[in-house]
Image (tube, rainbow, N blue to C red):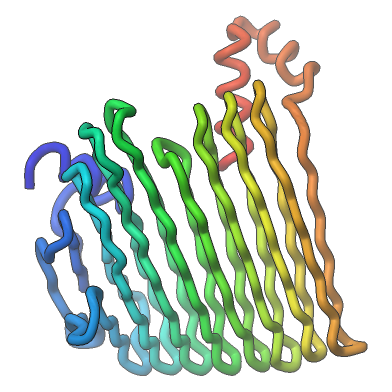
Length: 305
């Protein structure tokens, strides 16, 4: 890989060298490296672009990295990755996509990820999106995630997009069985004329199922953001959705929550807060010697941690 591709890998997957454990690296629409392990098998799909990741029952304290990097302007692709996680597992999955576009054409990656999480398994899934370039070619990322949680399973999903993506539509849906839990933590920052849309839909089907959707975002300049969430409580369950956003300059942010209780024992809550940085916060930091720009940056960085 050249220096640009190596830097993209560092940005989206914190990789400075070939990772230990299982991995699959996709670069400019083709495979750039792969390794399966005794408990984690990665195979190429035969009917469409993408891979199958199969994790055997009882796999614990193991990880798999599946980053995607694009450094060619004008490359557009859709990739389908399916995760089959067995029972009684405890694993970490690191994904993400980085795009370097210094041309005049649009570069786009649409990753469609489907998770089948077995009984009593725990999964931590991390997905980071990053874009860079000279500003003449668009960087577009449209991730789709579909989650199926079996009885007693747990999936925590962390998604981060804080730089360089001109347009994104982020769509996540899930169904949650008995005693299973889905947690989604999203962090987004937009600037310039960028646009970001988030769509969450979760069906709490099982007894004592739970979902917690948390979005934190910052909109700067003339960028726009739209957050939509829909939690459907179809049994005795707990659902919580939260959207907190900082708005700056001429940006716009909209939050559209929807809760649907189809069982008298469903407990569903939504919280939303959109506002500017408090003046007293800026003043306090500026009295410590920071400029206004430095104070704003510190507040934003702390908010997105």
